[in-house]
Amino acid sequence: MTKETYTLIKDEVSVKISASVPESLRNKRIKRTGVRVYKDGCLGISGYMGEEGAGDALKRAEAALAYKIAYPGQPSGNLVRSLTIGGKPFTPEALDAEVAAILSALRKDFPQFVLSSPSVKTGTYTEALKNDAGLDLLSAITLHEFVFLYKMNSSSSIMDGWFAYAGQEYNRQAFLAHAGNILGAHLREVSLPAEGKLPVFFDDSEFLVKNIFARELGGMTFGSGGSLFSGKTGQKLFNEGFTLYSGRQEEHLPFFDAEGVCAEGFKYIENGVLRAPFADKKTAAKFNFTPSGTADAAYDGTPTAGLGGMKIQAQAKTVKEMQGGAPAIFVSMASGGDFTSEGGFGTPAQVAFLMKDGKLVGRLPELQLTSHVNEMYGKDFLGVSSDKIMPLANNRWLGFMMNVRKM
Image (cartoon, rainbow, N blue to C red; front, side):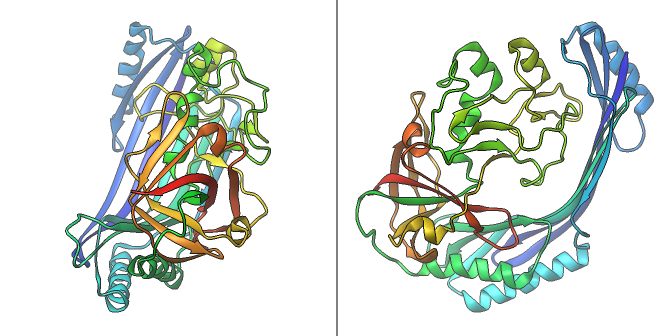
């Protein structure tokens, strides 16, 4: 029998914004601990909140073995590692003052907008996984997450757009410059230069244009033969410049997953060649896959296959170089689109900006974008830029040639 604890601690300060002013300040600490017991290929789990309750949770986990929850993989062991990333989070007083200063500057420079946010937050997020098989992993990540929604004073919409930042470092002027680029471009209405196939850029964290890989490279779907890519491991399916990998630390996630697997940089697609699906230990055992180190789990839940910071490898070109002198489109907000089961892609773009020489020059009318996964990540793949959208963050420009028309 192997006994294991999985601990999640959230120390977080957040500010809610309404009508361009701070509305409330919240300071919280939440600690959750899961207790796992492995025996005879089965897993028993329970959990508790706070500091007390370990003994009772262990008894419940041992009793849960009677439910025969299969766990064919071996628990991780014989690895000790600790990693702390980021500086100190804002104190409640400092975050409140910082938000007030940001709003004051934006109200002065852009009085045409009303700003809001469900939470501008800062905190340290700790995860620990430890067992009696020699596993002792600890990750502590300090992260600032500033998400601002905006609407024009004259607008009847709930929101007209948004700008955000997530990272370990913070600089007010850099954040205000980023906000100014978005808000300034939103005020300048421009027309679409032409309809047809045009360079279109997204934030590389945009899940909409990557969700087909989450769906079709899920280990169970892939291994069962139900994926578009089933049976094609080792084949070159995409552009030479397209590499899809697990970038957990780039996405501000712990270096280990919920099963204690450390697989930073695990490649699903490498230089266009299909290598492997997403797989937790159970899925890997069923189909003879390699665990991808992307398992997710609630503190008191069974690990399942997750995405683990799915990233596309950046290339050497800047976004300006990727444009090649041609006008391009940056999609800031798109909802309501998806990939079909055959790989076709379509989405409306509610907020899009015209780009010239890597700069936002104005807001375009609503657009309709279409393509196909084989084209987007094949001949029409422009890549991920070497430069960042905002200096403090990890987000970069992800580009494709896409069919574009006005709504």
